[in-house]
Image (cartoon, rainbow, N blue to C red):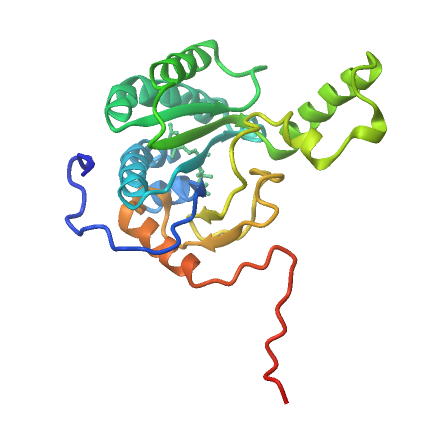
Amino acid sequence: MITPPPGAGKNLAPKIDGVPNHVAIIMDGNGRWANSRGLPRTEGHRAGEYALMDTIAGALEIGVKHLTVYAFSTENWKRSPKEVSFLMGYSRDVLRRRRDELNEWGVGIHWWGRRPRLWKSVIDELEVAQELTASNSKLHFNMAVNYGGRAEIADAMRQIAGEVAEGSLKPKGITEDTVRRRLYAPDSPDVDLLIRTGGEQRISNFLLWQCAYAEFAFNPVPWPEYGREELWNDILSFTGRERRFGGAIDKVAPQ
Ligand code: FPP
């Protein structure tokens, strides 16, 4: 049993058959949640910390093995300097505040993203958290910080072009696997379920390669109000879906 974050709901985890191995979450709706309460957008991000901890606890309780969250995208630099500074400082502080608790829960923390532009203090905290939790495998918790799906693919392509130029890779030998092995986390499985909170229905440059056959759940609940029970409900709706991965089954009854 995972120690719930303070104030967590008391409902027990349901028994779910076919829990997705890899769940990804776009934690959207923070700004709108705050503004609708007369608060600045940054207060919505602040409220997102509790939602995140409760969601991680809920993922552990039902046996999700990989959870990837979009904390800051390569496009989020377009936001106001005040909001960017808040998000940088807040990511750093959340990591510092929560790493020991996550370590006790058996969570391995991993960073997916680009180094350039990212605050050094954020990189330092991500690296400390990664090192501290490196041997944990109950849940692989991936934080996408300064992450973009196109940037990740472009970074892999640059590496491949370099290897071709130096002669260690032949163009004819390039396969899907060649690309996959140069992504930020080559050993991470494809995403099974992508959840976006906050009511918008788009992918926003998140995990473009890994979501090739992901199922999508668009939940209207804003991120600060999300938590384990919302996660379990989104997963329950996923388990009823038929996934064909491009294949097809003829279901016409024989005549
Ligand atoms: C999207 O909502 C949210 C973000 C860009 C930041 C996510 C950050 C947190 C949830 C803070 C806690 C988590 C970590 C990992 C430190 P939005 O601002 O786009 O909301 P809006 O669509 O209502 O404008």
